[in-house]
Image 1 (cartoon, rainbow, N blue to C red):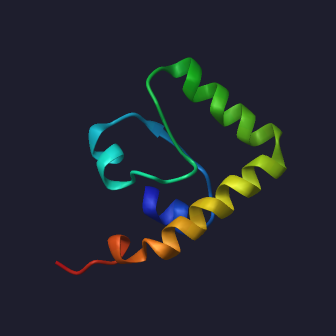
Image 2: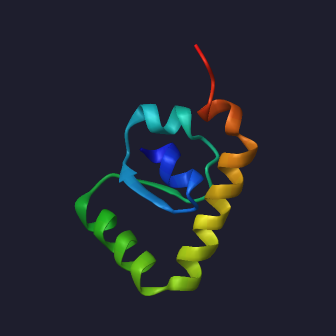
Amino acid sequence: MIADAMGAGLPVVARNLPAYKTIYSGAPALYLLENDEDFYMRIVTLLNIPEFRYKMGLANRIYAIFRGGMFHKKY
């Protein structure tokens, strides 16, 4: 789900899970948050500032394209 959102050019707000840190390290607009207040505040910020949301989404899209092998690896 995270890789799909990043590939679609969206910023991602998610819970801070160790697997996410490992898999998506270096993602420019992956906000891994610990508590509900930070989680909600990041979502509100992204909703209220369209230019910021667009720039962060675009950064994630570029990250997904250049790291595409990671997302499309055949095992």
